[in-house]
Image (tube, rainbow, N blue to C red; front, side, top):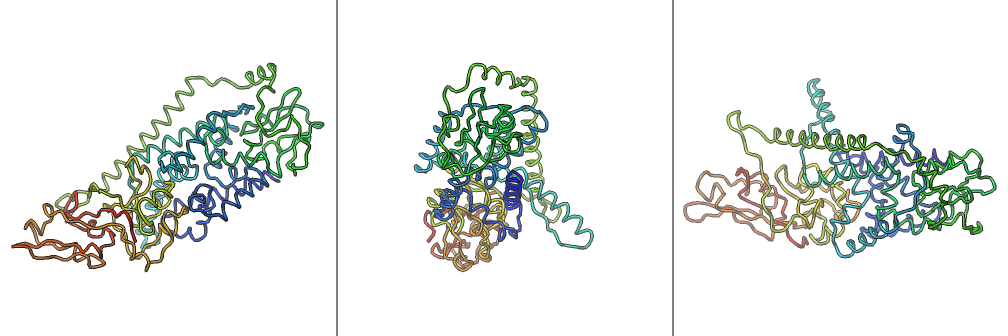
Amino acid sequence: MLKKLRVALAWIFWVGITLLFLDFTGTLHAYLGWMAKVQFLPAVLALNVGVIVALVLLTLVFGRVYCSVICPLGVFQDGISWLRAHRSKKPFIYRKGMKALRYGVWALFVIALVAGVHVFVTLLAPYSAYGRMVQNFLQPIYLWCNNLLATLSERAGSYTFYDKEVWLRSLPTFIVALVTLIVVGFLAFKGGRTYCNDVCPVGTTLSFLSRFAMFRPVIDHDKCKHCRACELHCKAQCIDIGKDHEMIDYSRCVDCFNCLEQCKFGALEYKYAWSATKNAKNVALEPENTVSATNNAENVALEEKEPKSRRAFMTGTALAVGAAALKGVEARAQEAAKKTDGGFANVLPKQAPKRVTPITPPGSKSVKSFYQHCTACQLCVAECPNDVLRPSGRLDYLMQPEMSFEKGFCRPECTRCAELCPTGAIQKITKEEKTQYHVGTAGVNVDLCLEATGKSPCGKCAEVCPTGAIAMVQQGETRRPAVAEEICIGCGKCEYLCPVRPISAITVNGKGHHI
């Protein structure tokens, strides 16, 4: 019953968070947005004390159920482990945790978080890593299916669905997501929760608390027959059953309850453990010399050697599939960019200009504040209805969102990203408050401007500016746009609708402070 309950809750969280990243209409956020806000690292960065205290108490009472129920990357690894169990029939066996790697990564993670080196933080954050995989691999498939339905419904005279462009937002982020998928998937297939227990900084943080959990799987030494069924099905590889000892490493146990299900003698029970007598066979700490030479020999015999050819085949296949997917995405993006003007001339696609300062969304107090709190989960990127947000390719802000206006502009009435952000990097604001945020300032390149160079009458930027910050002023025989910087809010509408291509004659540069 405990395992069924755990699996049901895990499915609810995993499906809910996945749909949250896939839904481009914003409809589901009202119902599922809280699932993103109860993730551990976003709660820490948002200083959400209530969620942090709740997760700490949850771990102290029930153990690391966060890792097996709430964390989407953890549930994803459980799915890979399930495939392994049903395909290879290869058992898990106890192994000592890699302490040096585990605590070394955790220490570097904390130092990077405090020092503001967010490239390292965003690479390892489990919720963000899962979000990037969904946004880069599942969302395109979801959008293609949506577009197919849009085409079919349109032919039937219905407009229930509408078409969404599928395009590659960031090649570096795509590559990172692909590598993450391959590494995490491989580790989960080979060793179950290896990533959680040896790499993930959130898992390591919770492990400090889980060894003192009130309720834990406890072995009854009198009933244990040393059949090792629990050990061979423990995907955390934290149960060691020897000829003369039984031990559970509670710092690595994620409370999946596989062991309870497999024990046929009633020797394992999930129960109140604070009053239990301390026993050297059941301590939470990892043993150093408890495994006998005979047991080691048995473990080696049980662990089948995977043929190198098979391993090479799997790796090569994964890389080939990734390369083919990337090629297909780029081809669709290039084809979609070839729009025609009246059927006579190809219109060059817009290109992003070089911006001195990146533009961060309205609701972020400043560029520095935004990037200090952002975990690069890509939720705002996946849900932006105007295709304004995309992952940055700059090394100092790698994978963290920035605004650019090749595909659209930031509509003054849209506050979707502020409603979605689970970390507080984008604070929740109203439509009226959004106009108070000056995220950037438009600047004119007179050498490219059609009106300023006398090539053609234009004035498009002044016509479309929602705040009236741009005016056409006479200078000699020509006119040119003049920008009132104190009024410009940096929405990018002028840059997006400027007819000059591939680089617009008017470019928005970010502002360090927005209010």
